[in-house]
Image 1 (cartoon, helix red, strand yellow):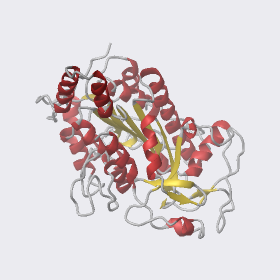
Image 2 (tube, rainbow, N blue to C red):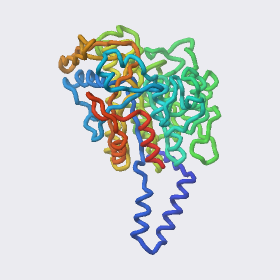
Image 3 (tube, rainbow, N blue to C red):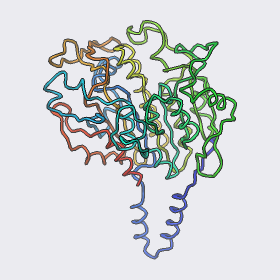
Image 4 (cartoon, rainbow, N blue to C red):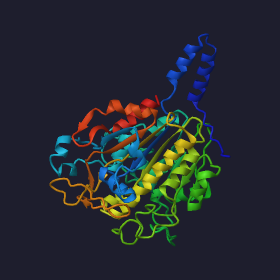
Length: 455
C-alpha cells in the first residue's frame, strides 16, 4: 500500500459542486455533455528532455544499441516533428542547409530553452523562469499546482542546474545555484526533486573527507536542514501546513522508492557530485562502458520509476519533467562513448515511463513528450564540412563512425515526439517546414499546448 496524497484545492471543490449541480439537472444528456466539455485532455503530463540531443545523437545511440536507426520506443510515437530551439534569434531552414556553418551561431542555452518550454515565452540566455525584462513567468508546473496536481523534476545532473531550474524557479541567472536551489527546495510546491549535487561525494561516487561546495543544494544550512529534518519549507498541498521533505541518498533508497510506500514529498540527491555517470574519472574518450560505471548511483530510469510512484498518488494527476542532462556535457567534451552511454540511460527512462503508462494509466489520460532543448557538438558523419555526411553504422555494440564539429550548442532543429490523446494538439502548431526534417514546431509551443490542456 502507498500513502496517498489527497491534494484538495479550490478547483477540486468547484468540480465537485458542478458535478452535484449537473446530477440534479433534468436533462441527463445535457449534463453529460457539459461534463465531457470540462474533461481535461490529459490528467498526467510528462516532459522528457534529452539535453543536447539532436537527430544524430539519437541515431548513434540506436546504432550502438540495436545496430540500426529507429530502434527507440518513442520513434514510433504517432506525433513526430522537428523542433526549433533558438532563444532570441531565429531559424532559417534554407540557410541551415545551404551553409555548413550557419547553425554554429544563434543557439540557445539550456536555461532559456527550459524557460521557453516551461512558460511559452522566449527569453535571454541564462534566464530561469523570467522574461527578457526580468519579470517572473508562470511555469506549466505552477499551473498544474493551481489545479491540485502533484509536480516533480528529475535530472541526471545537479538538481539546481538549468533545465530542472527552468521548470520550477525564477532567477535572473542560471549561475545562482544556491538561490535557485533554495527556491526549489524551500519555497516551491514541488513534490519530487531528484538530481545530483551531493556535497559529500565526488564524481566517482566516493565519500570525501571535506565537502565540495554546498551551492547545488542551497548552501550548508539548507543541506543540514534536509539531513536532520528541521528545514522550514512551503505548504505544497494547500492545506495550510508546511510539508517537509523526505531526503534519500543511497541507491538502495532510490530502488526502494519504486515499489514501497512513498512519503508525500521526496528529494533525492544521489551519492555523486555533478552527474550520475558522465563525470566519472578514467579515459573519457573510451568506447561506451569501457570505464567501470559508478555502482552507488541509481540510473535515470530507476529515479524515474521512483518519482512516478510518488506522484501517481495524487488523484488529480501530475506534471513531471525528466532530464538526461549529461548528454549535453558529453557533447561539449566531444565524448563519443559517453554521449552514447548517457543517451541510452535516457532512452531506458523513456521505456520506464511507457511501461508505467501501460501498467498504471492509459494514453487517454497521459501525455508523454520526448525531445531535447538544443543540439550540442554539431555531430555528423565522418568527412563532413562543407557537406553533411551520414553516420557510419558499425553494428550493435560498436562505436558508429561519427564526427564532432563543435564544442558548443548549435541552432539545429532537434527531434520531437509525443504520444497520448492530447498529442494531437501539436498538429496545429507544426506550421513550418524544413527541407530535410519536414514539419516542425518551436519550443515555446510545448508550453502553449500544455497550458491549453490545463485551462
